[in-house]
Length: 340
Ligand code: ATP
Image (cartoon, rainbow, N blue to C red; front, side, top):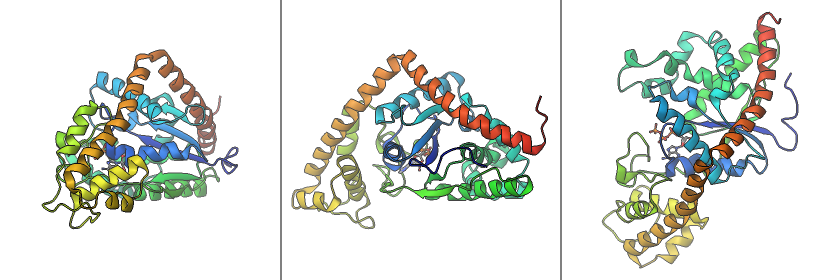
């Protein structure tokens, strides 16, 4: 059964992010990564950079390597503390791919086919053009999770279906062989914000779909980010009020303002009552600059000290391997692989 101590004072959690851009954007940070930082307080986190998932679509090898390091540096600059959190690169922990294979052999073809994200993600080139890796990536995701036998997995709404698959596969393995996996519970993150495209505030801010003016990259030159805020689309009125239906643009900016400062939206509405959009956007631009400038400086500093970054990732991988290898040994044993 589950090794050691995940239900102790600090329950284990597991989360990953793909290294598929040079910089994270405000949606990634305010919608997900900011909560990673908060999770460290009361949990024992395993945070990984999902390079195995990244290659489900074609990647430039040099860029992929660079982006993994940039992702790690950004996570540290955001406040992930390598003492409290194991931060590592997925391919450095071979058990992910190894358990992934075993779980693929327990997954029905029809079951994999029902994963709606494959349909979305393969929509562009059509199913025929998509890799088998993209088809089975929810199974790899199940392996990512189950290896650490976590109690909770932080998930957004879009990942719920995958967590269900994870739980099904865990239960199937336990039933067919011997109880090995804990069935992880979804952990609904508090105060996650959905950040919308600044130029098209009906769509989410997204690295693949947003135009350059619609997305704020965390590593953009702060002056550029300020300009993007000042040029963000608002509606024809002038009242700074949160109303997602009538005023999606201004509501999105209020969400960003509130998330970056910790101030209540109502409070901001009061402050800008009668002052119009111009003033509001000018102040928000300053808030953004104040936030991204030290973040960017810290990230660049970390990227300059490759030895330190490598050391953090090596240590994270060692901690992850220690847990993952133990789970994999149990799995191999129960499946019937020879131990020599
Ligand atoms: P894509 O271009 O595929 O949409 P992305 O970088 O914009 O990529 P993902 O890689 O799908 O986004 O997401 C990484 C994490 O960031 C996920 O946890 C996701 O929920 C979160 N996220 C992404 N965009 C937003 C957004 N606009 N608002 C809130 N959370 C977001």
